[in-house]
Image (cartoon, rainbow, N blue to C red; front, side):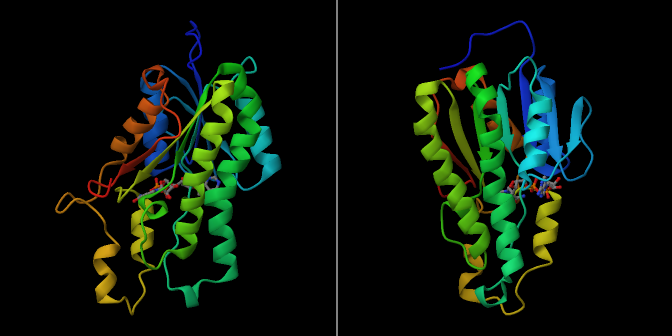
Length: 244
Ligand SMILES: NC(=O)c1ccc[n+]([C@@H]2O[C@H](COP(=O)([O-])OP(=O)(O)OC[C@H]3O[C@@H](n4cnc5c(N)ncnc54)[C@H](O)[C@@H]3O)[C@@H](O)[C@H]2O)c1
């Protein structure tokens, strides 16, 4: 299913490349010699990455950025990493928070995949979506986030089936806790009245292992986007050290 290798570098688009897992992923693709374009609201791109300011929820901006990123009508890899957290009890989730969480974490990957599809078809390329362990197993206090990430898992599997015959692979990674600025922001949102019976469901990490470095998630994304994963599509890779 993998495109024949060419002498020119692969073209890789990474959303969320301005921070955390996205920055680590963009850097890892640069390290292997790919031409990398990052899409982000802001942040600082790693060396060698062309960072384009783009809100992944804005169809016009996404289409323009993806069209600009394509070289010779081709994008080989799209890594959807941009995302935002949500934490709080159901009663406290405002409609704005619900809408923004679903927009960034679920609609964003839909928009980027739709815009990139002609280029991915031309390259017989692939997509790697970053969901979350919260999209696979129940966790409390993350209803909007879980809905978005669970949706992203199933969208990835559906599209793997739909696009497989066209030679486009779609895979998904589901990290547990990763040591990024997002985690620090989440910590500020913990409900004051957290139910102690649910505390251990909020950190489904390998006991004692702590938060993983973003480079570990980046390595998984790079593998799934590599020719060595040419027969891997529809995979949902859990990376939480425990739950499989
Ligand atoms: N850190 C974790 O523990 C963890 C665990 C599981 C899944 N994830 C997922 O990994 C992905 C990356 O998270 P991270 O921890 O690196 O977070 P991060 O906050 O360090 O980086 C996220 C990046 O996405 C960008 N972004 C946010 N909204 C955007 C938008 N509308 N358009 C374009 N860019 C936007 C931000 O500007 C930021 O640069 C997210 O999808 C997150 O849900 C993270």
